[in-house]
Length: 232
Image (tube, rainbow, N blue to C red; front, side, top):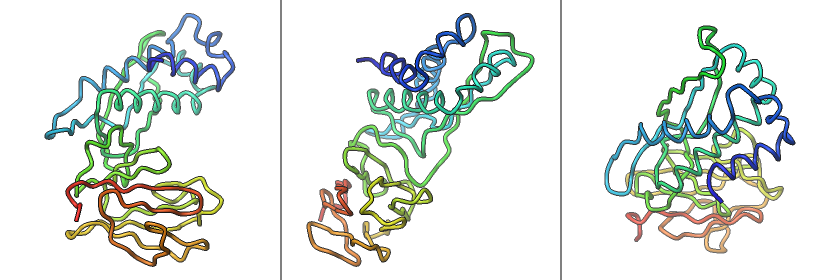
């Protein structure tokens, strides 16, 4: 299934086909998804072997008529658009410097059916990691039950709470469960006084150095640390 097909199915699932009526003759959601993909391709910058950066923050500006229609479904639409960009990046082996987000803005000067896309690279604590090939000692990759995150800051908190840098949806995980710190000597994981503990290679720890392939467990969640250059 292609990116656009997955996007269309996601939209249908969220709003039960209401978009087809709302967007009958105006801006189409699939047009927006295609425009974001083109913007990512146009702004892609090769930073080195195996690392091509693309924007992670996108702003879509619509005319007042289109914006009014979009506003009814904005939350669902931006989530699907962000997922579409992330999937496209995975297929193209692009990298981000922070979380992917999409927002809408209005410009009364734009006619119905016309829109503009602008993008930025905004660094965050973690970023979706479409491919593990970008993992380095400075930018390790965590595989959290199949979801990949690239660490882009020196300190990353994992937990169930919404204020964690990586939110782990697991009732056995504390709100702020553990943190990973990147130092000049490598990466260290530290338990933050969690209720059920943090385990590295099946041993409960308070703090432990991480190497490429290290297995971390918290609750029922399994995490793999990837950083080839730190392999000891």
